[in-house]
Length: 277
Image (tube, rainbow, N blue to C red; front, side):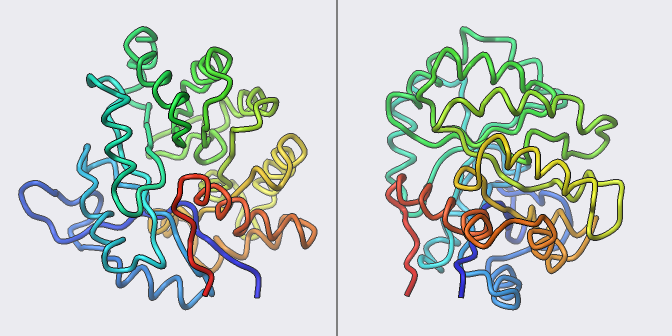
């Protein structure tokens, strides 16, 4: 059976003062998450710390401790704080820590203009070879300029660079900027969130066109599927989000890369390869 890894999910626990509810008043714990994965034949997943947890990544690390063979974590990280190199190094010492994630949209978008403030972070991440997932749909050209300054950065472009956030009126506004990353071999792209910006019902034919363009530019070995679960439930079921991959007309090897092999390689590079047994 082909390996399936969900490269982009969110999980959160019961609220208490230092961990407020991200989206709903109900916890979405790792046990519930694994039930969903098991029901769909998904072997492993990468937890993306919800934005409302600020810089607190403990719930994701707790989930790894409970399920070390199933879950890895991309933690939220403050790129403006001092000692980026030291903090990155210490983060990656956590069991299950596979990389960090930056988000720039809404009120945080203007921070991308502070190039000098961000340079210590980019330099540290490039030096250490730590994978950085970036969600900056309205500031993607700033990230393009960054990769030209730091061509060895190990980036992941979340959600194909699309505006997958509430209230975004032009989710495809900077989609063409995505292709500027294609010449840089350390940049990977998540096929996640794309069904959420589709104007079509399942099988989301307009989203298939976007994936086809991305495949042509990057190749399947640099693409990885992610569900964006449970946020994607506002658009479709988990089953449909996964079945969408089969609607994209990948050949069998391309499908294997998109559904698991690319993410597996990424995790192995971080020292956090999943156990296939």
